[in-house]
Length: 387
Ligand SMILES: Cc1cc2nc3c(=O)[nH]c(=O)nc-3n(C[C@H](O)[C@H](O)[C@H](O)COP(=O)(O)OP(=O)(O)OC[C@H]3O[C@@H](n4cnc5c(N)ncnc54)[C@H](O)[C@@H]3O)c2cc1C
Image 1 (cartoon, rainbow, N blue to C red):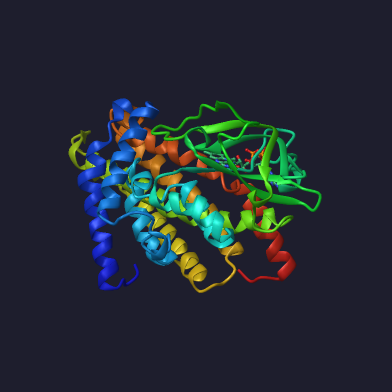
Image 2 (tube, rainbow, N blue to C red; image 1 turned 90 degrees about the vertical axis):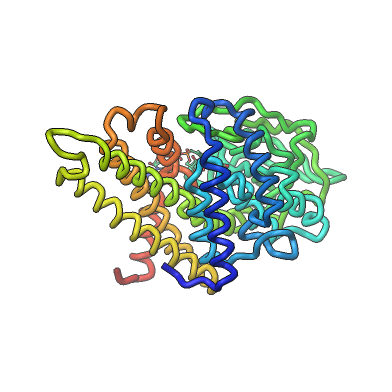
């Protein structure tokens, strides 16, 4: 794919060994729905990964990260993503990683010390609370209904959020609320009175390490320096976060879907049907070939967008195209993997059905496919872009 320097190559090989030898063998499918168990396991694995210098691939070296470029992260995240527990263990899972990107870009020196450093060290966790249940903000950011009013000592937040990933286990949240000037971001400690977690919304996902919380903000008072970035620039700031986050999801979910196809190939080579191995049936071969074609294309698109980001280009258009293609391709690959594996594929005896359930929401979060397609087409017509 891409040539890495010898030191990055060594790092990638160490990460691969760590995932194969320490992380995947510790996945326990029978306990896939036990959050406390898996959270404790990830913490243990993360401590081991920290001691081996394998965590926070995008974090700056000065802040305790590995300082990899976006392009170098493609292979690193794909490796981490092969395990349900890998991104958490290597400190590159959402929402932590995109929150690191946001804080690195926007935090004041005090905010870096208070929020960014513990995040990079893995001693604290964060969440990002932008989405709201109807009639608030979903796909349409103009529908933001949470409010922030100025007070003598800072800000008072009121609103209703949901699907804030990991909020139930987070130490602080980045909350989007509308001030008089416009949508703005605020750093809020979850212990702050008025920041109330109502519940975790149950979803199809296994190995859920932090849930997706519904939150009520009720006269939640935060100091003046809780404002992150510029007042009124919350949507632009969120965009900065989302573009990198989308790429990270593409990278890690390519890893998970590639693992699904590897398992299906293994099954097809061993299982007999109608006097032949499953792998000898042409329709199965077509599914396997298509999966390899799709994953190859998905990797190249992700790498190209990552290189553009490294070069400082605006990736709005490319990240949207990449997100749509990769989110749909990894789902097609996982669906074929399940089909090839028959009943075992949909059981919880093997990881395939769990992989499929983890991949499905990617067509919705960080922008639903339809919303991206409509934005892509709008840019094409407004800017006269050639295909
Ligand atoms: C697993 C998961 C994790 C998440 N984590 C977070 C998080 O950490 N923080 C956070 O703030 N949010 C999070 N979200 C919320 C996520 O960002 C929203 O689900 C997403 O923005 C879509 O909003 P919605 O669900 O309200 O869908 P809606 O806005 O209600 O849209 C529903 C559907 O309508 C269609 N649609 C909508 N608009 C258009 C359009 N313009 N053109 C064509 N079709 C359209 C699409 O098919 C879309 O899927 C998460 C969601 C999931 C599933």
